[in-house]
Length: 134
Picture 1 (cartoon, one colour):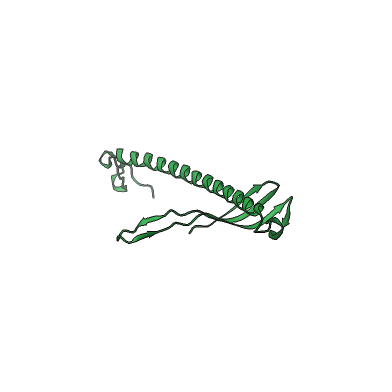
Picture 2 (spheres, helix red, strand yellow; picture 1 turned 90 degrees about the vertical axis):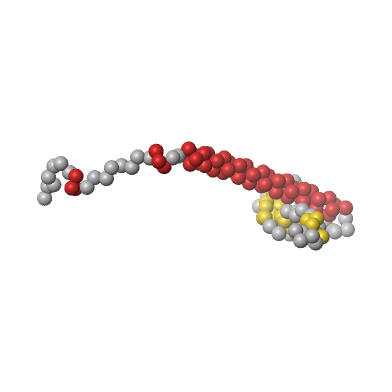
């Protein structure tokens, strides 16, 4: 499972954490065995700051039994998913640009005919018309 460290704003806070993207379900294996369920995305908060002050995680997180805990966890997970989506889009754009450049180079390579290339004539001292200075 891939892990990404990300930092983003959450209200007045700056939250840093580890994000594990979701993995898809695998329905069948190549050998016919049944597949397995994928994993859901996960975000683990590592640090929280506010106005350059570190906030202890136990202060940042409400009690697990409170509805505020689920709300905050969902909001942070949604922000992490959005950040991951931006990363994926940036990766896709960079890959598309790289493929475009590769296609242009490939096209030039296909147009190049080595038989059309004229090698420079080699000149040796023996071919010189003027005597060499010693």
